[in-house]
Length: 175
Length: 151
Image 1 (cartoon, rainbow over the protein chains, first blue to last red):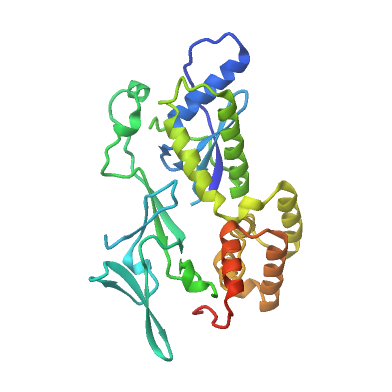
Image 2: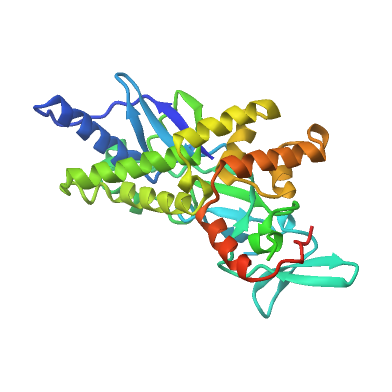
């Protein structure tokens, strides 16, 4: 889920008098540049882990409509397509939620996927979309998160809940 | 994004506990240093560390410690699981056989029922339950349990 990634970078910082402050300002610059940003083909960057003499290491989570959207809180762009729900599934138009038509000997139980319920899902795929601006990289100096096009998410996870044990936690815990 | 290529895209796996420690320490450091000169530039860091910490705090790693993790990894040696599988067990603390099946690939071929039970016992006895499991535990203590889950 979370990985440590080494990166090499050149960070331009103003000269500081004390070495301790130098490391702090490098850390600050790097976090400013990468925290909460997606790195292409790697994942969402959380924060700087450590500065070694020559290299830096970062922490990322990775590995690995009708779409159901799931959120981890710190990362939102997670989709579960209808075919990856517990089957058979139907969409209840009145309630506007997906329903697992769970069958036992007594007949079908409709298990509703209510909004806000906690689910366990498996990550089955990830996709990166290069949303970097085509202008010169000096655009980085401003707060670039507003400049990213809102339509395409740079990093999306595809999830599945179609195995035993997946889906709403309440379906699988004894109570 | 700059599109800088990382040297090694999967340099090391981190457990949720390690990330929890890291972010908690970072939060302390930033509180102590006090200054907010770069507050606008640090907003992204604040957001992501807050949200990630919030997520991890609801998971079983909340009550883990380096000693517990060490004890867990030692106990895991006899179970012949991959590093990634051990990490899943550490991060999620499964309590049912169906969860083990999700986390261990081809578990039906690799583990007998007794081995799954043994694994569950190891996991639940060494790793402390997470905050949500504790809530469920105190709720279910008041109610008689007889129905099992739909599995």
